[in-house]
Amino acid sequence: MASFCIDRMHAWLVASACLALVAGCAMTSPRSDTAELQRQVADTERAFAKTMADRNFAAFQTFLSADTIFFSGPKALRGKQAVTDAWKPYYEKPDAPFSWKPEQVEVLESGTLALSSGPVHDPKGKNIATYTSIWRMEVPGVWRIIFDKGNDVCDCPKAP
Image (cartoon, rainbow, N blue to C red; front, side, top):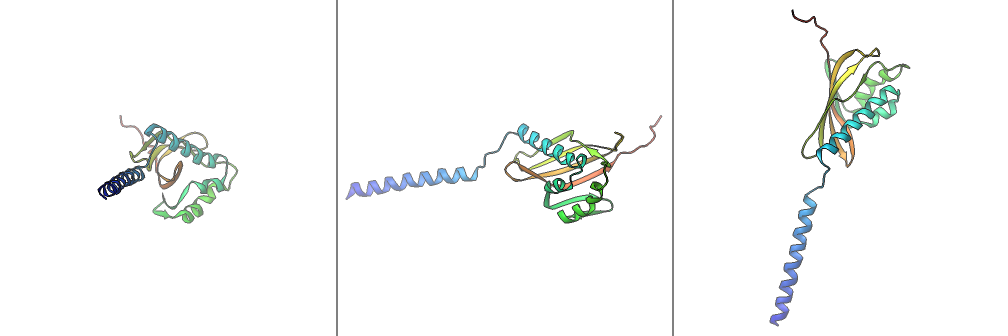
């Protein structure tokens, strides 16, 4: 009888240890290193900008999170539908009204949020603004934009 209790106790300890190990693994999500995530976000930003160059409004929409917010003009555009309604005119003419590209990308240590920023150029290549975008990894390897804000570049005279 004593050996039966010890065997049951031993089995219980082994099972408990296995459950603890599995639970610990489930709580720790593997993530890529920061440099790889920065590359992913930069590539996503370039693909997002390419939708403007290619005049591909349908592709533009795929980069937007459902709850995205774009700061455009005096008030924020809240949600994917509001952003697509406001941006559709930018895609209707044969030539792109502006272009952009990432120059700086940072990713949180958690690997779930990122910031990209860079210049915005007019069709002649003049730097007219800078943009800042916040990206969220919504499923592994898929980044969608949740915040976007552009700021005009000051064309001010230089001080003497």
